[in-house]
Structure formats: C-alpha cells, structure tokens
Length: 82
Image (cartoon, rainbow, N blue to C red; front, side, top):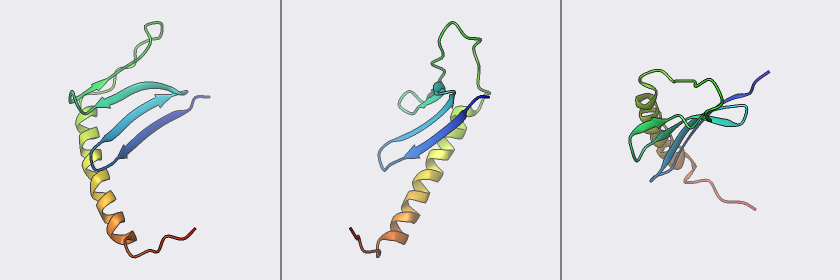
C-alpha cells in the first residue's frame, strides 16, 4: 500500500501546493519561478506530472485566497474563547 497526499495551502502573501507519495515530495509548485518542480531522487523511475499541473496550482491558489477571505468575514464576529 502507498500513501498519496496533495497539499494546498495559502496565506495573504504566500502559498503552497505539493504532491507526496509515501512521505516523499514528488511535485511542488514554485510560485516564485512560476513552474512545477519534480524533486525526485535519481534512483527511482521518474514520475512526470502532466502539462497544466502548475497552471492548476495557480488556480487553486486563487480559490484558496478567495476562500480565506470568505472565512475571515464569516468568523469576524466570533468571540475568541480560551
């Protein structure tokens, strides 16, 4: 059995999207260089992600930031309790 994970996260100024297999990063969006990076070790059969994966990551960041704004507005009147 394998564990396959996708991580998508964002803040006002930063974001992340990555694909992991068994705890190893297989693909990471580099939003500074505006490209996907496949940091796989040379001793495995290289897995290549399809064209458009980075563009999908950019769209996911826009959705994440829009959702973050919605949650902020929805939670602004909630009192912080210990």
